[in-house]
Structure formats: C-alpha cells, structure tokens
Image 1 (tube, rainbow, N blue to C red):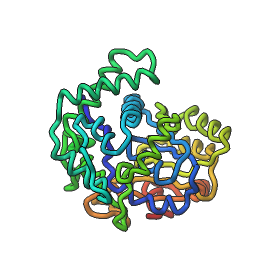
Image 2: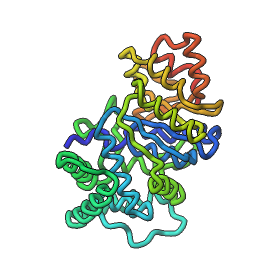
Image 3: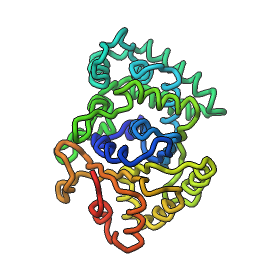
Length: 324
C-alpha cells in the first residue's frame, strides 16, 4: 500500500499551539484537515467537537482505525501497542516524560506478527459496530493501513519514496511524538495521559467526525456551520495545513473564503496554517530542521484583509498578519 498521509509531516505543528490556547476558550469546535495531529490540537484547546474535513476518501477510514484504537486502549502506551502491533510496556516510570519514554520503548520493540493479528481482529470487531456493510475492498484498506503502522513502527513517515526535501528529512512518528513548541514544551496527545483521555472521551461520545469533503465545496462546511449553530457552539480553531497554496493556485480560494464566512466564529477564532519551508522563499518565522513553518492568524482578521483585497498572492496569505 502507498503509505502517503498515514501520519503528518509537520513537526512544527506544536509551534502554533501556545498562541491558539491563549485565545481559545474551552468547549469550542475544532475543524481540521489531515491525520492524527488534529488530536493534539483538540486536546490542547479543550474542544467539545472535532471535525476532520478531507477530500481523500481513505482519510475517513484512517480515522475509523484511530477511533478503534482509542476504544481499545485505556492509556497512551496501550494505544501505541494496538496501532503499532507491539506489546505495551509492563510499567512506566512515574513522572517520566511520556512521549520520549514511549518513543524509546516502541522504537526498540520488535514487530510481533501474532500480536498484530490479534489487535487487527479486535480493531475489526470495533469498526464493525459503527461502520456497517463495508466492502471487502474497504476491509483490505483498513488492514493495509494497520499493517503499515505495524510493519514500520515508529519509523513510519509520510513518504517512503524520498527521505528528505531540500536537505530536510521527513519526520517519522518517532520524531513527531516528542516534538516541542518554540519554548520547549511537548504537546503531542500521547505525551500527557490527561490529553489522551480527553480525546478518547471525545471519540467515545462520537464527538470526533471525519468527513470526506472539500473546504471549497457547497455542502461540507455549510452543513458543519449549521450543525455548530444548532449546538450553540463557536468554532475556536481552523487548521488548514498548507491546503491554501493549492486552492490559490487552482483559483478556488474565493470559494474557500466564502465557506469560512459561514462558520459561527468570534474574535478569538484562530486559523492555523503550515507553510512549506522553501529555501528560495524562506518565511521569517521558519526554524531549521522543519519541512514547514506553522503560523496562526485570527480568522476575523483574515476575512477582513481578504475583503480589502490584501491577498494578491499566496505569499501574501502566509506573510501578512501572521503570529507564531
């Protein structure tokens, strides 16, 4: 199977979280794209709901796999055990750095095919309870995704067809777990049991929903906006990774902005965007060793600047009014 997009390649994601958390009130709604980096954001802002919008159909199945792992795992170590097909540690040192400790343990724990198949069967039983009438092709997709995590372990990365881009290595799961913000704090949802349990509880109550849709489409964000208003909630965070670059290039940026306007927001709602760390057009906030620089902007400010015609190029989007 093509392993692309099973994990994030944004080791800088945590850089945005201190700013976002300073603004976001707990209980808001988190909207994002991509894979499990969103769990870190949901826990950080204390989200009441989390919606993952992605136009790649397999992304929905990937999130169903994650949901099953949360259901089966009472702790961060158990979660990695189920996902990676490796037995969990028998005990953890009290007060130890969870992400670093788990990364070290699972990096040196060998893949166990019998254990993996046992976990795969448990995952299938879970998924069967909330995904009905799945085709054999879809089950093969689940098994292939799970196999990639198990076979590669913490060495899994976004791409296996290349090791680096302009001298910057693609991060592995081993790199992402202990990744820090600009002050040295770790935010990964597996680093603190409280954060893990927050996301697990959201999953248990079906508060995290992966949607196959498009940020520029006429239905997806419109329906989400209607649902959020019905729940009398406010969107606290919109994480868009680097999709704006593609939308700008394909002349779909206007539709994207129109959809963002439909969301119930307030003055604290924050957009998180990731900008490719292009050596030819280095962003002032870029740090060495990261494929991306991750920055924030208040969403109302973004919409105001757009209405004033401030964004003639994608670089304008990334450079004007950003915060780290």
